[in-house]
Length: 129
Image 1 (cartoon, one colour):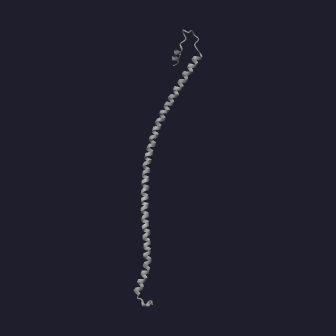
Image 2 (cartoon, one colour):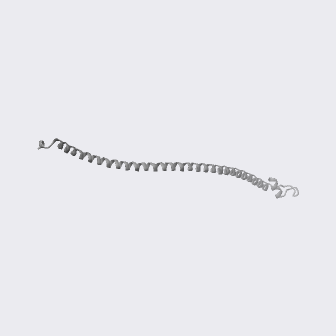
Image 3 (tube, helix red, strand yellow):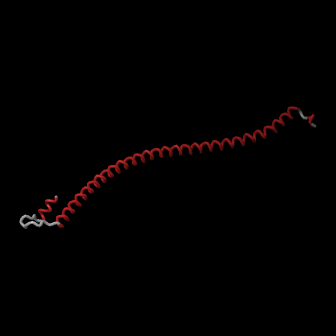
């Protein structure tokens, strides 16, 4: 029966039989390529969003560094002022303690001279200064 069919028909049927799987493979390949392009676009959008987030983070970091430097300078000035005030307070406290001890010693050792020569308490206090 094969011998009654023309050779061109056998070749065409064979080619058609081979073209069907080829066409099916091409359709599957086209679907995969379409999905790959969608994924590539999605990935590209994700990369753009990530780049925007990185740029925003750099900007925020620069602002944070400037704020930290400003806070450091402000705190440094306040600490220096506080140290100066603490030193001044220490001096005043020391002077007050010296005055108090002089007053205590003047009170404990009253002058036994005549009342005319003994200074009044106010004068003694002024002398301590």
